[in-house]
Length: 366
Image (cartoon, rainbow, N blue to C red; front, side, top):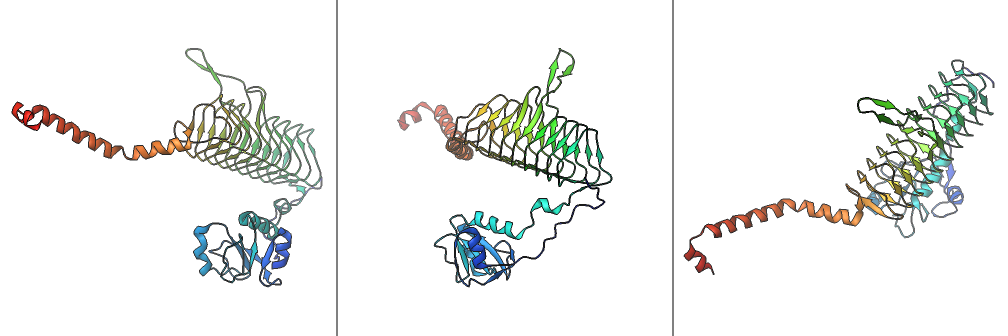
């Protein structure tokens, strides 16, 4: 591979312009207004100025229509845009994201192919075409790196790691021995893939470390946020399924299996050997016990504590996690607890007064 002393290119983007009709055609949607209206950028409805397009998908923001300076909007059918040119879409948010892609530079294109002179590469490592190997990266022996892979400064890949085509690893990502990434995986700064699982055996006095000899497998199109730790399996595989999106500061323990297209929000902790079915959503700061099974399509609310298996297509919340409607009822009851305690105290005082009253007063009260 050709060596290069260049650092990765910055995030600057060449100016782009599209007409309103061109944007509508790219989305396959209808538009209202001047077809030749030039759009040169994108922004939120509060910040948008002349020449920019924004979107409106939530009724709570309708009042911004009165003062937005956006030249055009992406909105749902039936929304009165107060005369602002518009593209009509069944899913304005998704359509707006597609427009953002038209104006942005593909992430991979920001990094020119080449190997920085400070990179350290072990014997037997093989690269595909078009890779960017940044400054101070370290790659161990017998690694296999696919085509158009981007390793930004400070990335560490240990021996026998496999990285598929078009993956992007940001600064200070570590992928430990023999772990495997499929294609189009994105890992953000500071994440560690394949750290040792938390396994110890106690002999009554000393905690003896159990060797963690498995690996981590990350399938196609997974994106992993910053400072995520995914532990290698004790034996076998810790697996992250195709299309999963993992937020910052998540911990996934050894031998966890996560099926395809799950969303895992920040600060979630998943204990060892738990199996999560496809299309699940796990809210921020939720904790999952080990050796349980989460069914397909389960939604787990933020800060929930999941202590047992959950069947498919159930929404749970609270600690311990229970069906969401039940959890909400219990929370509502707890909010009334001070009032109930006061009523009980008042009743106790009245009973005590009755008990201490003279007998004739008691008879009179009857």
